[in-house]
Length: 145
Image (tube, rainbow, N blue to C red; front, side, top):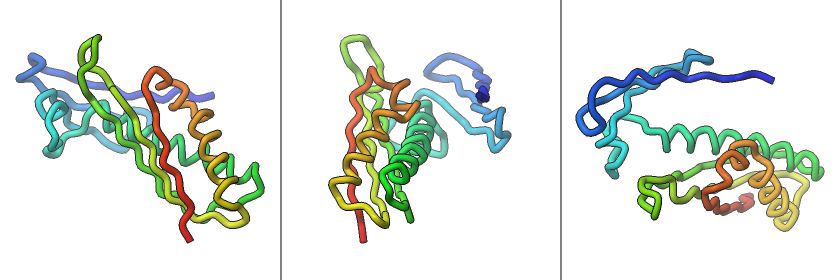
């Protein structure tokens, strides 16, 4: 199985410094990062580890759910998946405190109960969910017509 890589070049202190995250495996981009914007409500044109985790988790969950729907006899027509990764404080300091997955789906050949089961199985089986198991992960999954 493949290994994927990213690289960050950082200059300066935590509060005054900044860096660039490069997606080196895919070569699709280099993105600015800095701590003040990471900790702020508005990202202001920079990304953050939490946003990158959210991107990874939403993509992984979408793939996992597509697979589970197919295994259950359904046909996914469209999956709209979002992941919210929250940075906060807990007793160990700055931490990822929660992840919320939301999916709205158009699926043929599957009722709502079967879809809910597929979504729960996908959440639990997604490799990114497994890697983030120390963080509470919620799921809001619904079929749309």
